[in-house]
Amino acid sequence: MRLSFQPPATLPSLFLILPSLTAALGINCNDVRHDGVHWNLTPLDGPHIIYQIKENTNTIRNTTFSINFCTFLERPHHVPTDEQCPSGTKVCAIERLTNKVENVTEITDIIPIAGEYSHTIGGALDPKWTRLKSSESSADRNREGVRLQMRGRRVHGQDQKAIVEFLCIAKQGEKTLTAEDEEDHKYGNAVDDGHDGTIDILSWEDEKDAKVLRLQWKTRYACEDVENEGSSSSGGWGFFTWFILIVFMGVAAYLIFGSWLNYNRYSARGWDLVPHSETIRDIPYIFRDWMRSVINTVQGGGSRGGYSAV
Ligand SMILES: *[C@@H]1O[C@H](CO)[C@@H](O)[C@H](O)[C@H]1NC(C)=O
Ligand SMILES: *[C@@H]1O[C@H](CO)[C@@H](O)[C@H](O)[C@H]1NC(C)=O
Image: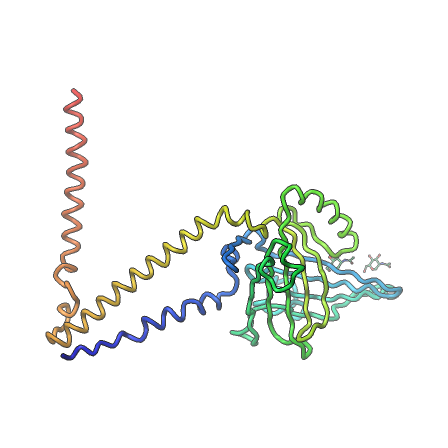
């Protein structure tokens, strides 16, 4: 027996590559998963901007935080390159200092806090999702939502990190919160994005291993019951996609293995290599005949129906 079949190396390794491929694509907002819970955060896609103002006697420090965690922040052409974060950025801070005496404003710092730079200047986004209810901290366990941690590159010799906490607020709670947000808005540390909820800056400071921006995003899309409405259908699609993929790979493996067998055992060449090559070659004719009979049945059935009605 010469049956020392070695499966082509590409097949199993493809299965290993797939998860890392999706990880490389970054964040899939419509399919956020952790601990068996699914969220769809797609409605929060797009850029969101929060200002933090610190006023002293002579200066105003105005920090603009921009976040687009689903896709990436755009880099408008009319803004000079050195006044923006690099491409691939998801969270960016731009600091402007106004000298009240001289009445001049200048950009004093640009910090890309989180982004995917592994293919350009280096530094991976490395996104991590944590369901608050299954978090290690007991304070989190009473709350509903999900936390996203993102990384990027070192800036000023320091690692950077953004941690966004998506907190569930019930629909009726959204209204009372809006009143509070008006209050917050005066201090410039919250944005009310209408249906998207509100974003607050909790802190932006040096922590153990990095400088960390902590944001809290109150939104109903962080609620676990909201996502569950849509999860069955998207879960269904996920299964269907995998099913197709597996069937496809099965057929491919069968054809490759069969061809290899034919090659080795029967020294087949060309078309004869392919298993069931006659059947495969006949498929167009079988299909044509089948279509003809379907058409005949439909037409015949229709006219017969016509006669019997008379
Ligand atoms: C802070 O800077 C942004 C961007 O330049 C500007 O739109 C906003 O009005 C500024 N806020 C204050 C209070 O100066
Ligand atoms: C600062 O300068 C701007 C124009 O550059 C002017 O519109 C504004 O009134 C000035 N503010 C003060 C306080 O002088």
